[in-house]
Length: 300
Length: 309
Image (cartoon, each protein chain N blue to C red):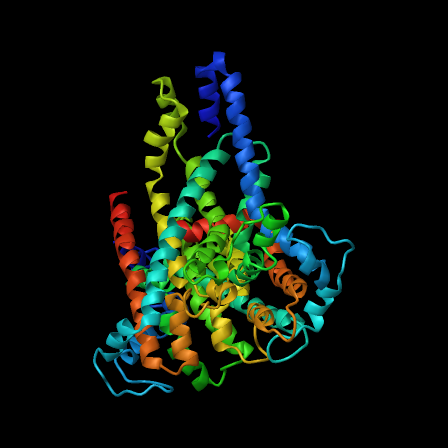
């Protein structure tokens, strides 16, 4: 919208000074206040996690700790009680990785191939099927919870990491297919036809022509899936066993377990730890994160 | 149609004589087969399964003794469900309206050639990267009456400041709204900002040459052209609202009592901890109905729009 400003400045060029400056200052003030609103919870969490229990009781949310206490962090990591056991959230943190990594890899790969077929190897009914699949992005998962729980039982993977990977792949593929399909739509189908005339097969074309240009959409999809699955709670709480819980479930248990006094500093440290991986992704690859969000929303 | 042309074209060799069906012709269908199967079973099959269960008297284990609409009748006579449903109305309505308002406003503000726009945008959007469980945990601490905001304001000198929404059955639902808005409004801002950047610059120039003020330009030209963005934001937000489960679990756990339950939490509680599978399934079907009521018009207008292109 740079146009807007340059033209408006030209149009009213003479009286830019007084009112405009006031408005400008007001605008920045509002933006900064709003930024403070978004930042505050995180800052409070961080401050709280570095205080000891006594300071939390006597101080206020924003009062700084007299000295930094990292005990709550180590306790949250390795010895806090999360309902059934008292080994901190570290084992569950690892569980989350064990669930997320294969689930992201498989769902991205399947999505890429589906997208490739739906946009460049259309067959009768493939468009219809794609539409039917999109519904999968939108259904409230409550509708499938119970049947899925039974199915996992029959397959013998109830309460296992494998089971959770399976569930996340099944309900993630709709999104990944959508992402890849939209991306591959822009590839001219003549390219595929020409390659076929030269004798290239389905996978050769995918591997040699399509995959090399897919890096941006792969990054977007991986980030989207990573965030979604890492942050999942519903599937985690419904389908995991005591020792296969993802970190979100463990965090919730930790916060809601109260043996003796409430240790808010430990709660906050655990919450930050649970949020770190996705926050790191956001900070280092924010551009792709936003692209995934908007792509998922606008087209989904 | 495209599909047929592509297929018949590919089934022929250069000389025009039909080739035998090669593996390559089957390959697309073979690789899609697992997804098709899984979609049919795990989305549509399960939907039907849950629908069937909602008409049975299932309690702890699924049974297939049909009881007609009994579960739905019980559901709508269940006070807890009615509370959850009206909570969804309050929560969803406020959450959507506030997010849209904040999102549009912030997007327009950020669109004024702001210095450090990137940094500010990053700050507004980061909550979207974290889990609702983390959000709930953070706000639970901020809003708790003994040590949270209330105490901070009192220590600042506002001695009569009272902020006990989290433990007040009449107000607790607004705590959910605050936390959810905090998490999702930056996302709406990002959607609209992307939309604003896509508006045709010539249109805006023309409006200015005609003497329209910045305000008028936004109101009469730019915002109306963002209707599609508005629409998708609406769909995504209502979708988040209907599915909200984790936020309640972490922030209030439905309490005090069941005053902050949402349908998703009701469904989970009755199905998995109260052994009322039939009732839980009926509530899931009502949730599905809500989503479809929003989704079908949306998809319909999307598809119609495509045809016009």
